Amino acid sequence: MNAIVAIAAGGALGALLRHSANIGAVKLLGHGFPYGTLAVNVAGSFAMGLCIAVFAHYWQPPEAMRVFLITGLLGAFTTFSTFSLDFANLWERGAYLYSALYLGGSVILSIAGLFAAMALVRAFAS
Image (cartoon, rainbow, N blue to C red; front, side, top):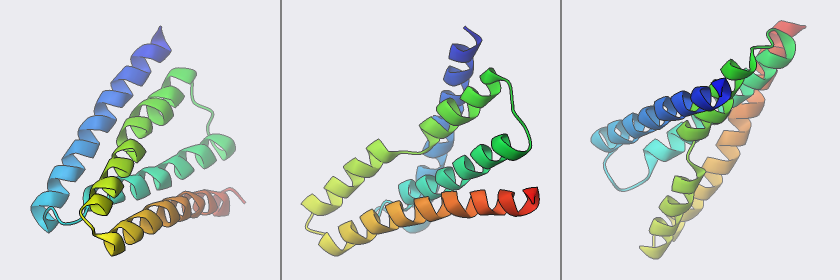
């Protein structure tokens, strides 16, 4: 039961953080491109890399903490379902260049963020 509560709490927090990032991005940059979703996917992937590497090299948290962070918080914060919708919206509006930039940027930068975070932690673990 502790794991379920931890996931729910992390999920609620992650969803609130994602929503806040999206609102902030729209206020700063407008509605023309899904900057908020791109930012949270990259930041969330970087955070996932940090967590996984820290858990492997420095700290093995209790299960409730691990599922709070990974499944709950980061699972709700990163938004690949929203990413898919945003891509479809760009595509259907005929914004093919923005669609391609968003697709490539989201995937490449998120994966790069994860690897960068893991490399950062590994550099300190050596």
